[in-house]
Image (tube, rainbow over all chains, first blue to last red; front, side, top):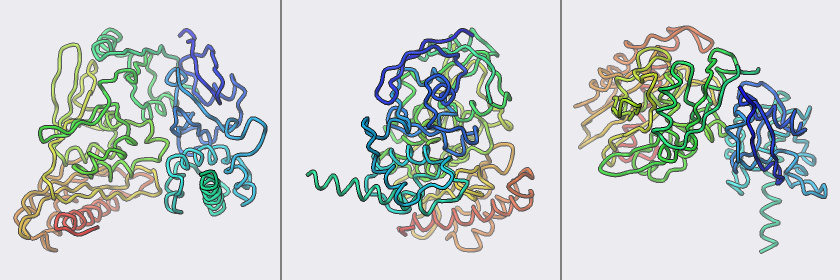
Length: 164
Length: 291
């Protein structure tokens, strides 16, 4: 079971690495790439703490083998803020609206919400709740998570309108 | 959880995939989205030595409506099923069902081919395919053949798909324009497998039911095509008496397991409730009602 040579673009940077085929993407990101933002929660595909963006779609990285992501573009929570450290509107909104308690689910929540708002920039509360149904918060802090996403959506829409 | 080690193969054509599968034999599994297989591998309930990834075979993707039928490539994801305007227009029950499978992340990778080929009685699409009289196209080195969805499932995780065969596409005869449909699924929480679920497709003409098909999810070792339940509606006004008869006929063929979703008798009853709701909604849609 020889290691495989894989190439990906992770948070905008080209990455080449060797990995056993059975390596799960979450382990590859955390242990080989040092990207410990995406978390391992349930390890069974339910909780969404390991959510990353793969080729423009939200996926659970504990359910993907590294060779399945060969050639892919990946964004993790580390790639959401500006390079200068300016927080993304979602990150700022989670901070302002107390969208996290223990914070364990937060990287997955924000990475999922990031894609949700790209797909649907003006979501209703129901759209948001359905859109993050693959992400669990054991603190049950959903009210403020939904509020944070709504606030970020409003902010991003206002910015877009101001720019036009 | 670390799965067992395996060699990874990425064929770029269907003949190459079939050849690999034939050469590697019992130790090989094909993987589509992997969202049924990978969890089993993490639990080491599946320990394939070779994984044949179908993602680079373009002909396995896509949705085509032609000649009164829709053909869906096996590698089409549930998210693509949901996004398809053609399916929404011609065969909306697929979208309604896909929206009730798992969660957005899972639907982005989970495929319709994997959902129907896996043979898990908890999967939602198989009963819908039986209701729609779908045909599965399968291919191996020995050639191509077609298997009716209603004949495909033998027991939990056992199907009539040969070990050297790959399910390549699903062909569904388009239900008539104006048909009513519904997929009703009772589950403990969003994303869960069904406690029980029912699919109904029917047509009405002048207040009379012309045709009706009913399928049941997760109330037996296999999906169930509830033939007698559908027949109980045909020729009636789909009023209370006919619906009662259909519900009774559907409940009679269930053989649910007792598990975390409830005792067997409860799940049978839930199946009946799902059948009733699905018939009522399908009737309302068939007669021009909004919901």
